Image 1 (tube, one colour):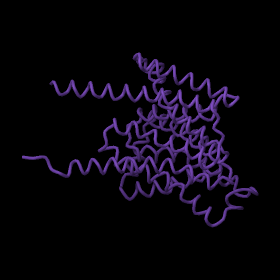
Image 2 (cartoon, helix red, strand yellow; image 1 turned 90 degrees about the horizontal axis):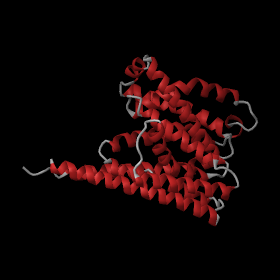
Image 3 (tube, one colour; image 1 turned 135 degrees about the vertical axis):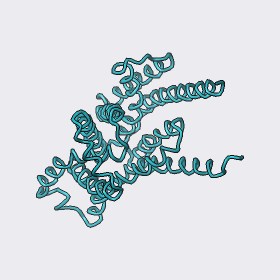
Image 4 (tube, rainbow, N blue to C red; image 1 turned 180 degrees about the horizontal axis):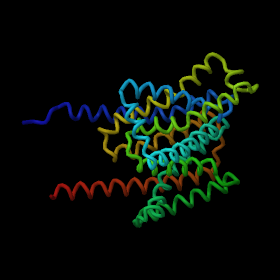
Length: 306
């Protein structure tokens, strides 16, 4: 009996959906840039508040909200989710602050560095051994950060905070036995009260969203929860049918878009020394991807011999 022809089509559809998600995430820089006149921390308060509404509605419609609340009665799980929510807030706040304050290229650097920091976490936290190509990749990354530190005239702290918060967030997520939607819902639920209180505290500030937003800006602020939840739902669906060897390289679409957006659209300075620093980071990523594909081929060959 021949294999159904729908299988490759569904795989292609999943890959197309995955690509769409990463391009949406990359384009969100343009979305946040439209809100550059507002305080970035207030925007995060609105994002969390709006996300809570959207995600709780979705969870209730799919009858997954009550089981989630019951699951959160586990103290150890609640602690892990709470820590993840703090890291997520740091990542979101740093990213939005950087975008609205003309540091888009540095956000790109942060998300380029994040995979390297994940390797470092594997070595120092999980006591994994580095292969020779991984050691070389880390050396290029460290060299790139050193060159960029000289180029910026300071440590690229925005990039390092983004990379560090995201890498440890990803590490904690592996310790949380929840689906992506449930996990994110739990995180924003924990953040809901502080976020709502912050929105109320800034409500009467002269430059607050409440006092200065145009109707268009109000719509953009209100939809920050939608732009958070919808791509995640799309990704959760696509990732189930897309091989990790394809998803892995796709994650670099977002920082590449941020790099190009900051450089070409917002005229952020890109000196030759910054190009040199980014080039070292890109060499590192090329080595990491080469090692990933090599390891995957070896596993496939080993499986075919069985």
